[in-house]
Length: 484
Image (cartoon, rainbow, N blue to C red; front, side, top):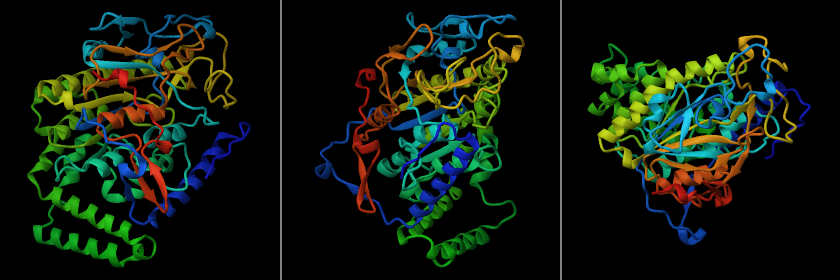
């Protein structure tokens, strides 16, 4: 299935067609038979030696502006009459723990742990016609440009399927901080936050509010153990004999039953205490608690300590909120700095102190960067989605980077075998701020992550008679220069 886009088509129509095609692919995947793993002998690959056992993806949903975070450029302070064309960074650069790496003011705590990090400044995204958050987030999380003829698994589901759980009680794929109901582009978000054709047992445990996570791993209040056990059995029977029986393959039904059994095992285990951040010492909670995102980082730490394989923590994507900085960009990013700086740095320090950082790959990423003038990249025909167009700043809301930019952005990686205090790639010093050294595609970012986790980019499963690879056509190439 291909997605044809006329650049003159209004974005709300593009979104509507996109959702229809995703829904069709998702329905088709319910009928899919069991995916068959294609062996190295069949496809000529070997699984690499893992440098990480766990992965935490810190997702800056909405388009984190690299020039205002990890790739500072020429700084222009706010003043009325400032030419928009001269505005590159709206925060000054600060020193970090690494002599040749500077990042933006407001990220002082992260700056002090950059000597544990590899900073990739040359990540690039494709021009997908219309620069929609949903399409780019789907692409980043699955590795595939949407829509496809099948529901593509999230990269966390790949790890869950290929590697299995580290702790049989803790779900191998956990998603923290993103509401999937009633907020913004909910259907688009749901489309990639799944295990796709792998089946529900490899899908995420969704915890939108980390402070309520402990409630998700205990029977309803007042329910006796016997009644809880009976309800579990009834759910199993419903899946096997209910309406789903006519709408899903035997494999998909069995996968759902196994997911229910996994949930039941967790609810009956002492390991569920990992989900209760109130059990963390007060001093530790206070270090993380800058809001919901900070509490999510604390929960991620506890879960990885207890054996989670893959955890995503997001600032949450909601249209026109958080990193979706179409208005008052500078003020919004200043707030985002304050929410992300301390928790991310503390997560790195705590994983290091517990001896887990060396085998835990922590990634900071976003679907694209931002610019004051360019939508997409130079030469793109993408619709300009900025909510205002001015040549000079006349109000504070104009000060900031408001347009979606795909020509160069930053990805930060800690632990998991990557080099410490290492800078890879470069973007131009003046607009257009495109990657000018060692550009890295989304496909190759995925190949790098999977290689760290011991999964070959050529790993494939037979889906309805054709191979489906962890990176498209198995062609992802890991950036081996970043590994120590």
